[in-house]
Length: 342
Image (cartoon, rainbow, N blue to C red; front, side):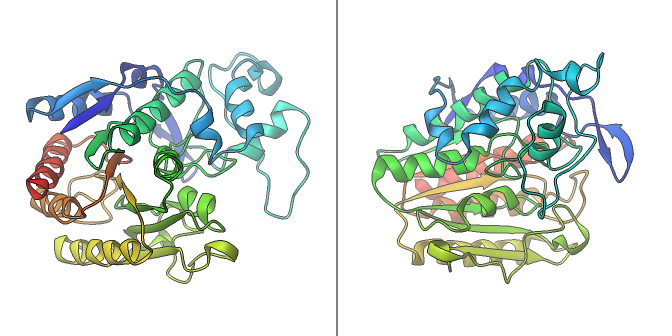
């Protein structure tokens, strides 16, 4: 399988975040890129550097003022708190607060949904490079093939105008919108990360150009908490285009694979012409999040099921954090996918 990546992923190297009020070591560390790349290389896949594609593909899913914020926040950091080497908010905009702030200290709280995604000097460069990987992967499958994009930082918690959950630009959404625009078709996203793809849901909730399905651990007491529920099915033009499949905590292979079968049926019933698989490996039984119990063989079977979808498929890396079998899980998924493609 073609595997697209960029070493610019290493430019974003957060060392901490706040979880439940406590400052702890960051899960989304640069080492993830090395582990995943190494696993793909050892499995014999065809590694290629991503091309640059600029901002236009990103503009299909993110607002101009949000992209401007990402580009300028670091340079304005002394306005927020002099001397810090990262940007994080001290205040947050509530849904009932609509005024867009003039100053950067207010904009940080407007565009950052939580305290998990600190922005550093090189973060913006890494984020754009991650989006380039997504677009390059989408471009590679326009002829009907399949490819894997090793995107880091991940993206599926980033919404039209906000960061969140370690994410800045929604790579899976960028890839899906690009496929739809280039092929003149409706695209689909199947998100198999342990966390609900709430950013993706927000982006496409009132749009009918992308059908979205997220398979994840029940969010009632698990990030992202406020989205990812079965009753959220889309609105306006997007009514009926969003499916959430929350799973009971502790669910394993059988439940996970049944949900993937349902997701495939949902997006194909919408007549999609291309598919994005938002590949989260954090459903693993060994992942630090610990909410689901998918085995390495479960990921292989997931790859086989999704590989059997006879459409252009871009596999975009989302979550999946450091454990002794993170690389094995990636190799199993890609191997299962390739075997289904023949």
